[in-house]
Amino acid sequence: MKTFHIEVKNKTGLLCRHKALGAFKNVQGTREQFLTFTTQRHAIAEGFVDLLVRARDLCVDPRLKKCLAQNWNDETGGDDPNASHAVWREDYIHALGIDGVQAESFAGTRQYVDTLAELIQSGNALGIAGAILFLEHSTPPEFTCLQKTRDRWFPHLTPRAKLYLDDHIRH
Image (cartoon, rainbow, N blue to C red; front, side):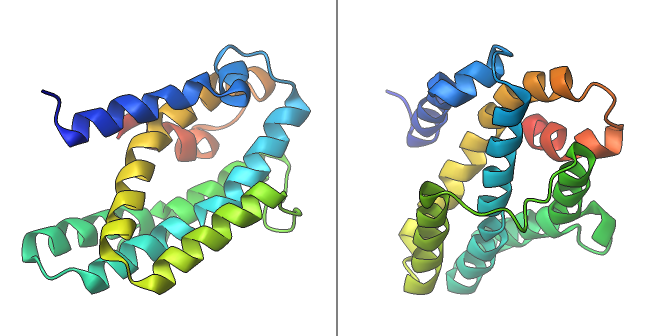
C-alpha cells in the first residue's frame, strides 16, 4: 500500500498533463504564452512564505516546528537576503523582461491568491499543512515543464537568472 506522501507525489506529477504545462514541457508554447504564464505564476508565489510562517506559528510539535523554520530559512535566504527565493524570482522576471508585480492578474490567479489568504487567516493547521505539502510536491514537476520552454525562448539567461526555476527542480 502506498503511503500518503508517495500518493501526493504521484498525483502532483500529473500537473505536466495540464494543457499549458504539457505544451511548455514539449516546447510547444509561444514566447508570449510563456511570459503570460510566468507573470501569473509570479503573482501566486508570494503566499508560500506566509503559509510557512502561519504553519510555524500554529505548530506545537518541536521537530515539525524546526522543519518549518528550516524551510522558511531556505525560502528567505536566512542571513543572506540575496539567497532569498523572492530575490531569485525577481532576478528571473527581470531577465525575462517582464514586470510580474504590476501585471493584472487573471480571475483564476486572483482566486488562488484570495483562497490562500483565506486559508492563512483561518488558522486551519491541517489545511495549511496540506497546502504546503501540495506546493512542495507540485512545484518541481511544474518548473520542470517550464524549464525547456524557458531555455528555448531565453537561451542566454545567466545561471543567476535561471536559479529560481532550477533550484526548485533540484529539491
